[in-house]
Length: 446
Image (cartoon, rainbow, N blue to C red):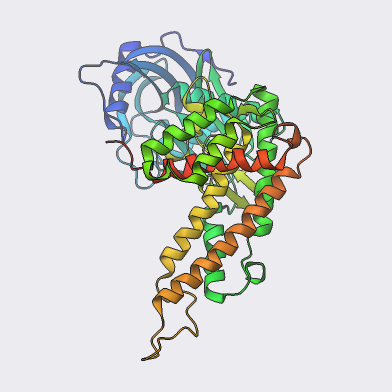
């Protein structure tokens, strides 16, 4: 929470509405509704004087927007970040006289002042830069050490995302960039300050690098220089800790295996109808409905895959945000994503198979073809090469699936959330992995 003093007319609201309108009209990726004039809902003075910072929440049509205004005296030199389009929004007047108003997150000095106001403490910052804006937020990074994220489009998803991060942190889940401060005022979730992961490498990049090394060298995956199994095991440990934290925050419910089976069957019929009559698919769905042991449901991640995790020297982290491709899926609806925790496990297992398939596809016809020659001309046999690459990738996938599941099941307490019978574990995981594979393969609607 930020200790702010609500403004009492230092800048009149009609002027603030005009400045908010200028911001929304210029904001990349936004389309302002024709004729939708901003209506100021809340104002707070964060930094008095020059440069100053005023925080404004306004309604623009059906949307709520959040604009942080920087104020400078006319003629004062601004230090706008390189590559910024003109962030000046207009003129205004307050108790300190005439001021040029601009997007405060576009200027190094006002961004630093905003950071100090939100974090509630003086900051020691050597340099800063603004990241590419996301659909509902803007982030300024300071010394590549901490980041200030301003939610400039206020949505239920953004509010739930902030609440979720704080809840997970309170529950002891430390595989997220560490939160420094949460910025709220009244009913509004305005942003947050959190650590930036140093020298992070995405899980997808690490897994793909491991596969490339294996396909280039051949042999058993455990002997390849880029063996991923240790990392897969640690990823499984992180996933289990996430589920235990989510269970502490949101509780548990009885699982409805009949509903899960119907959902998977519906996804198969819609996305891959040719699979619906296969004996192995029907057997998985039938076994799911008739499981002899109860299953539990918790709030899950909803789309846990290699692209949503990153590795640093300190370990694995979730790198979800409030926007777009990196948004936490469970924050998209008030009911969340209550499923078996094995659904998240299945998502990661599918991801391991997907990266293996991508590695084979990109390796080309010569991958793994050393010594494989045509009978006549001594030309490498492309079919044999592809077969060898596929065999290597399959061995890599099997090894890392076992490592991930081993790391997951070894975490104390996880046995209370997943079925205790091996057959039940395999059945539930296989069903959700089938659903993920069909959903990912299906072209987007429209």
